[in-house]
Image (cartoon, rainbow, N blue to C red):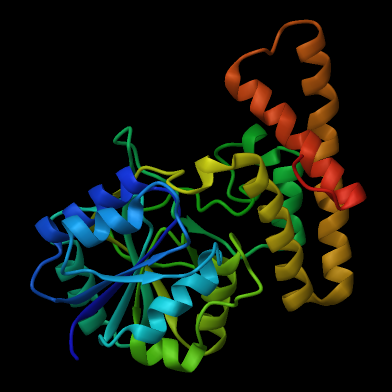
Length: 313
């Protein structure tokens, strides 16, 4: 079947999912051949909402929380379109988004994966383009050199500084909140690596596209809104640990045991350098807000997991 197969993975994000599906109805365009929602055993009524309000959508009940990669692969296995759109449940399309992405693919047959300009709920540009991780780039983040030198490309870490948000460009990594991929390329590259429960599967997939000769592109003429936290906000500290776990898997896969150990040490350093001053500021009453409290708790649970292997209690 020609056209676009949209795949949405959702977990307890009914409000966001409804908005996402409504935006597809409104702005999806004639190129959509099917929309597939893979529900990771939500308990908030999401599956029933899809069945009752969006009968045109194919609902796949995962039977458990399979994570992002495995659940997306369930959708990919059922998709029949020439293009696969992996869209987060907390994303809403803008007008002509898919039409402009498809036109870009037609103009660039060497591109296998592309994404639109992503706007946050505040109306500001979200950073959806990054560089592949390496020791230098991770070190810049640990030592806060990226924040100390905000105008420097050398110390930017994985950020893409001075991004041209008006013209298409090739990038190393696209955020997994919204991808459009050629089915032809996915068949060559393979699906998402199911060892990643949540996070880092986007970096891994982008790296594999490039290793197989496909370009990755940022296409800002196409736009969408990403609200953020549609599923991860349900258990933020657990997801902080999953991010660590995923990155350790990524470094082991692509850089071996030595690379994995190096990332482990860098992660200990990262959270250790932040935990002590944040704790001190909390004691003297200078940091007591909601965000400061979460950051302190995040450092604490991540250090605990790294040192003992124990998760959130």
